[in-house]
Image (cartoon, rainbow, N blue to C red; front, side, top):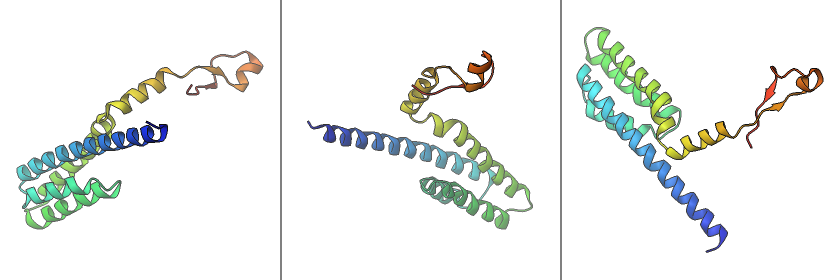
Length: 144
């Protein structure tokens, strides 16, 4: 097989794996949002969960849009501010969970790449270290 064909095949495999992992993370997000919204008592929790899972494929804007509709519905349909604040807290925690745990650890190859980058750095003395012989400041860590 030609090198170009191998490269395209590998790229297709990696994109497919990334989309599969993103779909899994979005499905788990939708399940968690649905359970949380139904516990809070937001009407049509299943609809908001499915919409949230689908909108999360849109980078940056999707999760905000997915949270906006249930928050507005909780403001309109639930008594007092408690339901709306609980809904805001639910989506705030899910955003943090996604940013810290789910998205960064969903693909093993990205973890492997980060580990290799961390282990592959070598210390090179910076300009000020060469002049003064000081080895404690201005270190440069290139990735080799």
